[in-house]
Structures are given as C-alpha cells and as structure tokens.
Length: 383
Image 1: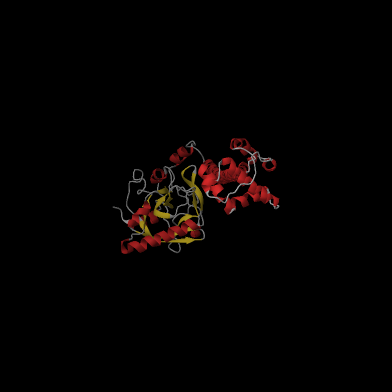
Image 2: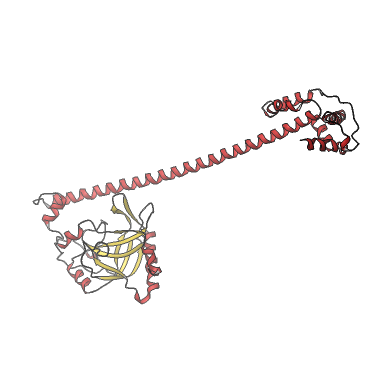
C-alpha cells in the first residue's frame, strides 16, 4: 500500500525539459571554462513564459501562479517528512524519467529551498563533490526542470517540481546557465558540441562557417517561435469553440425545457376547457336542451376556438322535454323516471334565470338547491 503522501504522484502529466538528443550531444564535449556560483547562492530553475512541451500541440505555460504552487507543495512535503526530506534531487539530465538515455543515477546535489521571484522560480542548491566538479569544469550548464501537473486539463500548467537536471540543450530556450550571468562580460568562447556533430544535426556541410551555423540556429529558433505562436492560437481557438459549443448546448437545453412547459400548459388548458364544456353539457342535458347522444357532437364545438359562440347557441336551445313542475319534496323512490328528473332540473334552472341569473349561474344554483338533492343523487346513481 502506498503512503498517503505519495498518492498525488499518480495520474499526473509530467515533462522533463531537456531537448531531444541533448544529452548524447553534450556528453561528447564538455566546456573547458569553470562555472561560477550565482551571487546570492540561488539559481534560476526556470523563467516565466510559454515553452514547447513534450508534444507539439501541448505547450507548457509557466507563470508566477504555478511557481507559488511549487513553493507551497515543496514546503508542505518538507514539513511532512521532516529530517527524512532530502530536498529536490539534481541529476545529469533526467535518469529518474529516462534511465535508458541517462544511465548515471548519481546526484549532483539537491535544492533545499524554492522561491518564486518576479522573473521566475529560483532554487537554493547544495552541491556534493560531483556537483562541485561540474561547476568547476562546466560539463553541464543549463537547468532542466522535471515537473508535472494533474492530467486532463486544457493546458499544461506544472504545479510541482519533481527534480532538476543539468543539460546543455534545454527545451526552455531562455534558460539561464548555472552561473552568475551578471559577471559575464564576454560570451563564452568554448564549444559545447563537436563541430561535425553540430553541422550534421543542423543539416549543414561540415565546412559551414560560424555565420552559417548561427544563421541556421536563428532560423530554427524563429521557426520554433512561429510554431509556438500558432499552437497558442490554435489552443485559444479550440477554447473559444468549446465555450461556444457549451453556450449553444445550454440554449438548446433551455429551449427544450420551455417547449416542455408549453406542452404542459396546453394540456392543462385543454383539460380545463373540456371540464367547462362537460359542465355546460350536463346543464343542457339536465334541462332537456340536448339528449345524451348529442353530447359527442357538442363537446368538440365547446372546446374549439369558437367555443363562446357555441356555448351561447347551446343555452339558446329550447328544452325538448316537458318542463311542467313536479313535486320533488317526496322521498327518492318516488321521483319518477329520467325524463321527470330532467324536467325537475330544467324547471329549477328556468326559475333561477327568471331571477336575472345567467344560464351558468342558474344551473350552479339548481345544483346546490337542497330540494333537488334527491334528483342529483338519482342521476349520479344512474351514471
């Protein structure tokens, strides 16, 4: 079982910033001049900026935000491990990531502290004997951070420093050598690569002049900068496209919800219209204006667009049954047949309308009349 403090090392995206074939080329020729320590004893691990990544379409974005995260993570790890913490290891290249290329696993020292400064991430190194020799002889000059970040993010923004390698061909082109650049008044005159190997890598003839070599290097750097700019533009375009897609999906979802509400409203409205139409038909049937068989014909008329006109037409129909008043004060078993019940209801509605009520008001009043309760009960029992 892995200790809890190691869990964060898993499922993370890692980049080591030595250029391809950098170690192999640099091993063939070591610089002759010694390297001076930085004035305050600290070295710049990496400057802020956007740099090529391990994949052409996956640039590295390193800002003060990421640097502060590294400092915080470093302090947290040191606090958890206490005396067992051995600092961030410094290697020749990156044997901890690519042991096939970097076979020397010995440390040159370690970084005992990290600090985010206005121009980049700095580390306080503690060199061992191998590291001191490298400083004196200048075998490996440029820092190459190996760092990582959680997988699955739109951009690679490293927030943890795993180790630091020294290389002569860093992927971060504006890396500063492990030396006090403020004391350097002249550019170094030593060659860090075999001229034949250098011209071969650049696709030049071995007889190429220094000017031709520098021109080719300048062109490669310009091409790399152009490619990086295009990659950044493509990444921005992809982000904008993803945002637009999300907004479009959100609008579509809102529209779908609105349509569902409209359907729900229309269904409820139609049900209300049918309830009202049935109430009108109940009154008309009870008053003898229509027969039960005629309800099917009238229902669509009373629920359509012309329902108000049809309702008026229905109320204007004269009762087809005898409306002579009958005594409804007797018990239910003495109320006659269906025709007699309808006559009783019709008479009551007609009497109410003579009082100035509308048909609907007259019908509702008749339905609430206690004297007609046996009639209504008989009609419900029959249904």
